[in-house]
Length: 154
Image 1 (tube, rainbow, N blue to C red):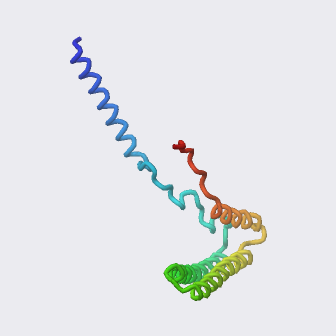
Image 2: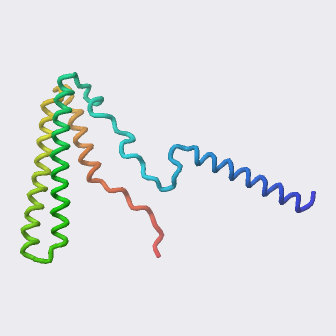
Image 3: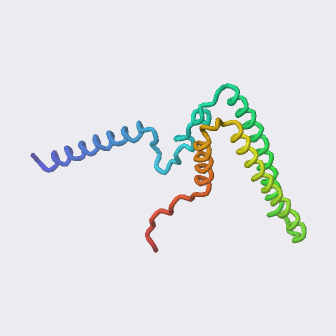
């Protein structure tokens, strides 16, 4: 065989392997490099975790919808107030705005604890350990930061 024929065979083989690799990558569920994983990928609904009956489920849904409404309002107020804090050039005004942000943050935490207390009243007593683990999981996931990748120093 001549060198040209061998090089054609090698190039053809590489093209076929690249095509197969490309098809494999595209057909995989997460085909983007650096794609963020789905936030809700491994989360089960709270109703599945605690096996709620109809009355408990109705109370949970009511508490959840009320809590979501309160949290959206608080987040909106915090965002607006934070924006005015950063845009303000008056030091006295900034101090009063900062106190207002602190009040909203206090309301934020109080709304969360009220919702958790409502959940404690709704969830059956035999499931209290699961609830405590659930709450612990929420608080630790929120406070954890991903490890920094090992990057070469320049």
